[in-house]
Amino acid sequence: SEQNGQIWTCPRNPNLSDNDSRIRKKQLRFGTWNIRTLASPGASEVLSNELKRYNMDLVALQEVRWPHGGKECTENYQIYYSGNKEGKYQRGVGFAIKRQIDSAVISFEAVNERLCTIRLKGRFKNISVICIYAPIEDAEAEDKDTFYEELEELWNRIPNYDVKIVMGDANAKIGKEILWRSIAGKESLHEESNDNGTRLLSLAVAGDLKV
Image (cartoon, rainbow, N blue to C red; front, side, top):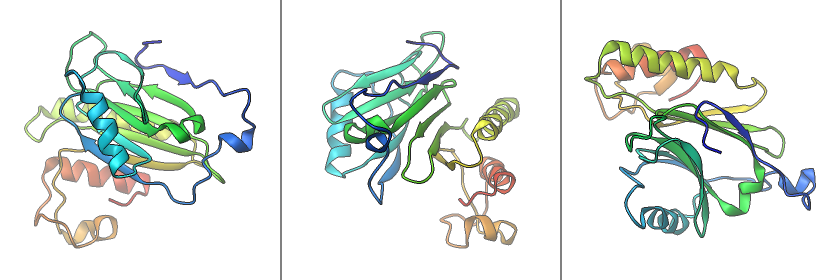
């Protein structure tokens, strides 16, 4: 279906037991990629081939630029996406997950063109991953406020007993300020955090996250 803001429960293969549907790998290769667009011909297959080359298991995607929300299949990966609900080919987020572990997907929620989340059945704990695509640094403060309010609300809805991960493009610069050392360490590329960076770090403090 194509329903933004809805949680889609992914049907299980009736031939798989609960144990079979869990992620059995001890280590997973996660990543994030602002791909600019998947709306051009052949782009999804190029993406799939690149992810296979690096042996990625799950990658958060930004600027997918597919409208509405849904799931597309490629040879090696399933692509879950969340786009503009008015049908515009702009922004958009999603996940590419290796087909061998797609049976571990419990649910996918297409929130809007900047936020989505996927939940996986893990060996010991379920894993919930949020993909973000934040407004640019020069965006209106109101747009940034709305984005972070929606992100915080989404974070708080995820069960606390899940492993919770946020990945994506925050359009942020994280500085070396002493104030944030316990969250971001001291090896940042930038000397000072910009406004988006400060917002991201504040979210990390509230959610007990590391950046």
